[in-house]
Structure formats: structure tokens, C-alpha cells
Image (cartoon, rainbow, N blue to C red; front, side, top):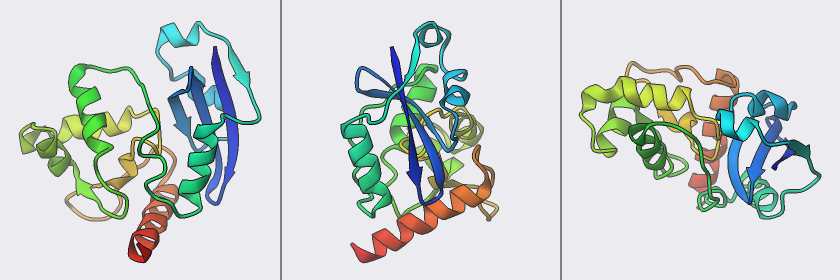
Length: 169
């Protein structure tokens, strides 16, 4: 069974989907089914149940939005993808709050050639667990914020939130 909770955050509703205490999807939407339909087909075979509280996931997510930027780092996550994509997602989770990297730098940190920036961009575009797999921390080398599945305003808010919190630490 997939349990879903919609949390209120300063940037809007955040749907969290969990299976056995592991986040399988998260995104800035008030409708968890928008995330559910993006899951791997085997997970879509399970039922989706909306709950009021996901326990530790809820608590640590709230702590992140309250300024404890490292709170969500240890939450277990799982999403489908090739071994390269999963490795890029793992590497992305190592990018600290308050910092950013370019797509080429993300590829390089993952042990791929800098020319694999396109693969890094694809891994971000296919990320199902925002902001826990923090694709918002990846910026184009040409400047600006680039794109973000939930809109550039959300990406900008997350980066500002993390920069403020990192400056306080």
C-alpha cells in the first residue's frame, strides 16, 4: 500500500507518498494522484491511501521547512531508473543545502565525464522525490535558474530558503 499525505508548506502543498516508511514520490501539488501516476507500474498496482500523518517523514519534512535544512537528508527514498540514473540521484542527495552545482558538475561528482551533463539533466527531469532528491540545487552553467518541474518560482524559493538557513548555521 502507498500512503499519501498532503502537507502545507510555506511554498504551497507538498504531496508525500510513502511505502513501508520509504518515500517513493514527493512533489509540490495538492493532489497525491498526480505523483501516484508517475510511479513505476508495479507500485501503481498498489492502493493509494491518504493519511493525516506519515510519522517521521512528516516530522522531518516540517523541520526542513522550519529551517533545519539537514533534517530530510537521512530519510530513505526509492525511485526507479537505470543504475546510472539512480547513481546520479544518490550523488544529488550529497549536494548540501545552501549550495548549488551545474549539470556538468553533478555528472563529474557522479564519476561521469562532464560531457554527461545531459544525463544529469535527464535524471533531474525524471526525479520523483522533490525536494528530498534536491534537483532544485542544480543550475545551468549559462546562468539563471533553468527549469523545474514545479515551476521556477518554487525552485527559487527553495534555494532562497536554503541560502538563508545556511547563512545562519
